[in-house]
Image 1 (tube, rainbow, N blue to C red):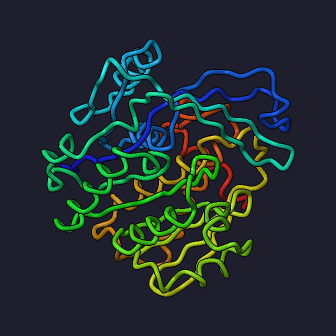
Image 2: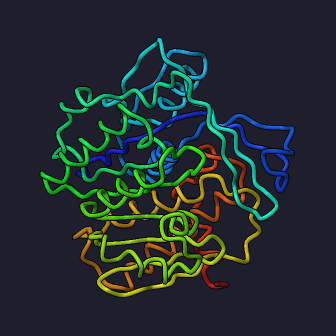
Amino acid sequence: MLKPVLCGGEILLDFISKEVGKGLDHSVLFEKRPGGSIFNVVVALRRLGVPVSFLTKIGGDEFAQELMYIIRREKINSECLKRDINLKTTLAFVAVNKEGKPEFRFYRDHAADIMLTIPEVRDINPKNYSMYHFGSISLLEKPASDAYLELLNMFYKEKVITSFDPNIRPSLIKDKKDFLNMFFKISKIVDILKMSDDDLKYITGLTDAKEGLRKILNKINSSLILVTLGKNGVLSYYKGQFIHTPTFDKVRIKETTGCGDAFMAAVIHGLLKCENFLHFSTSKLIEILTFANGVATIVGTRYGASNSMPWLQEAEEFISLYHKEM
């Protein structure tokens, strides 16, 4: 029986602009959706049929009650969840600008998700899980950042697969040099590193993804590196080889919040089906990435965050329908 994936990171409420192209400064109408990069991955994994446990801390406000209801509804394992009724839920406002890129602004006053502590994770046994996926804004504030990094070291010592998505939000980064030091420290020990093209540009200053990766490869030991390129698909680096996998670019995209998280969940889903997580053929990797591109594309045709994550049957039907047109 497959052990659950442990996902550690933030859960929050996204207020997503209904006015695509206006950005945060000109948007007026917003709709509330459950989100957070790691929570989006958790929901996507469950809907793809993968057992998953979620590690985070949730507050005691009305928003937290709503999020707990969603966790139960999605049948997410809550054995690692922590609660503090005196803390609040992080809120994020999201809008797509005229360039088609999402803009984010976070409100984290006394937020629960940044208050997870090292003692609260020390009783977690890495051997009870198939892998550990973490990252995003949960690494930007203490004490939660220390707790998630402590857990990474625990999984690393037990030789359990680890996966990292920095999901960079520049507006939340207080010191770029400190952030980059943390990024490269993590990237030296995780097995899977996933970035967006915007993440890679922030890290390297280069707009060309392949050149950006070449610039930092000597600082990264990850077995599998993935860079999502939006409508241009995904660039992967595996066993010393660059591989570009196109996406379903003929499908009309409505809104992109959560697409990268859906992609990551689908990659994990595919890897878990392999006999050896990180030793597979190039053709198998392309198959996994094609499926992941399809799952991300479905999310792009919908509106917003964890609610938009597809079920396995939907994903399989979509790919069967559109794959021949790629």
